[in-house]
Image (tube, rainbow, N blue to C red; front, side, top):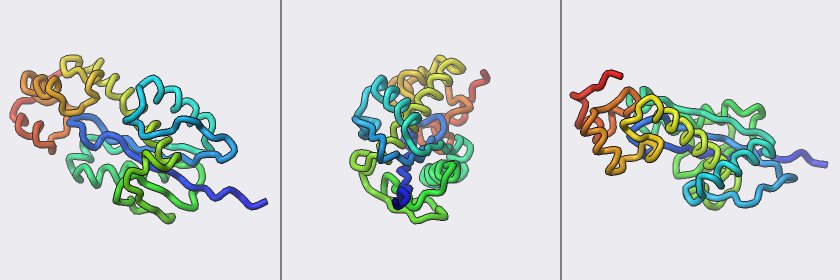
Length: 195
């Protein structure tokens, strides 16, 4: 019997928000334990994502998370920080994959072969699984940030530049978790709140 070829799917969540980290996940699915309902995390309800994330953690051959913090996003830029988070997720896997499939059009620098697949989170189950894990983890972190900085309402918009978030930024200025290199935050940099 030939060994299973270990293919990891990788995706990140959090490129567009004005606050919080970029979180990436790497997942190697088990062909013997298929997971029904995998899809682009943005197309699923929060409850469905939570259920699938639990199933992914239970059934996957391997999974791992990586992240890039706000300071790294501001230092390197969002693209480089996203690639760094993905590289960290792959490096954290307990096994070395034979190949990595990444959502998007750019691959992080890895020690194994890598292929970028545009809209891979909608078409490749392992990438869908990574997308779901990353989103569940990042959303939970933003809900925790809401506890620390309630007047931004991070629990509702998860850091994305909604009208509600932009109004809170104008009213209160940026908090330490806001990305200073992003234009809407940079415009308010002179106002810093102390919490």
